[in-house]
Image 1 (cartoon, protein in one colour):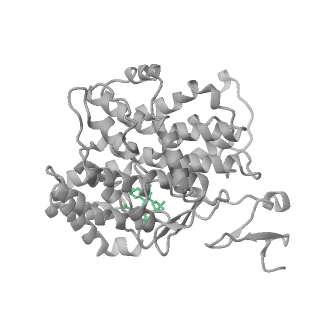
Image 2 (spheres, protein in one colour):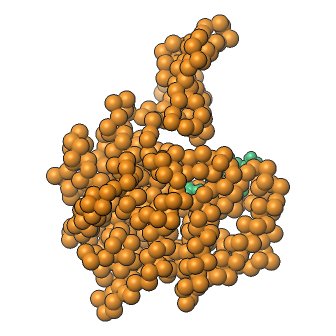
Image 3 (cartoon, rainbow, N blue to C red):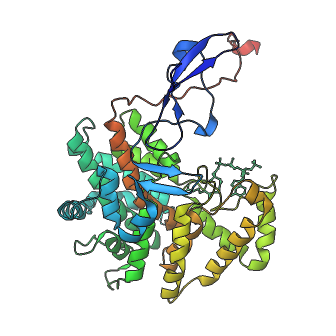
Length: 430
Ligand code: ACO
């Protein structure tokens, strides 16, 4: 057996040689794609704990070291120095843009920010108190009914136009879902503002009053968007890939990603963290909630804690924690008591044997909601903010998949545990 294969022998003595694949970095991967053909068995891995579903060159995570790279660049460097659209370009095209490439990308995104006027009718179909994520799933899914000119998924140029449209229109749709919720008229995008400032303007300007941009708010949104831009094969990205593997159109795929993101175990955690902190209310109650989180009979979990991959620290949480002070100090109506509560909760949980043993650390969403709240963004919009930022990651993975010659329809196997074969019994004999 050569160095890059692994031999697997069944109890009956049948053997198969499986290839070991090596990525640029990270653990070796056993290629089991021939297993069923060779040995007639499937593998079982609920939750994909040990299973790579694809090859990807976009994002790398070392959960043990707490490292995250986009196209090889450490997240700390991008968070400190890049703009969100620069990172979006990097994720989509593989390299950081030169100045003219970035200017052209910014121009393209800027000129795709408007949504079709008739799309507004979709918002009116929702009751005013619809959750903005419900509106996002519906309206983004409906985009495929508008852009017939770019829906040939086998044409790379069509794919690119669809990608640009989604990145550009997502903030416009997100802000409109908020305006619908608060009963205010939609604000059109403005071409003189950059991506993040434009979003804040669409959220907070009204026809009666201009919104004064706060550079600290713009910087905070830019940073949070960068931190949320991609995270390799997480639940929502895997959902986008699975939907895309059937050759569904990209708007439908991204809508399915938004739906998957919404759950509190994934992107919905940022909203759940704020709800939890407000419910805890005071430092004196922390003990009680930590005890609840440890109680296996109680479904309560410490929201914003734990991660499938990070078992040391989530580098994004470390970055956000640092800028929390800056943002909160800058905001007149700040929520530092909530931040103080979060810091104390983190401190107490990190000293607790239960959390130490299970390697449970604060994740990106433990602090993101505190910042969004300080910027005046309501809890129900937190996951929408995540969806805006993650759109580029979803789209980059969808584009990569569509270009992959090994791409096939995603079709997991199962262990069937239902009834054995049995015959139909006529109704009168049951
Ligand atoms: N509070 C209390 N206990 C927890 C928590 C938590 N937040 N997270 C995990 N645990 C416990 C589990 O009960 C389990 O304990 P056990 O071994 O005694 O049964 C152990 O830690 C391992 O947890 P799993 O659920 O098996 O880990 P998994 O990798 O499947 O789940 C997840 C990861 C979903 C993130 C989980 O930690 C969780 O629910 N966290 C809270 C929700 C959250 O913050 N989600 C955001 C994730 S980041 C993102 O998507 C952007």
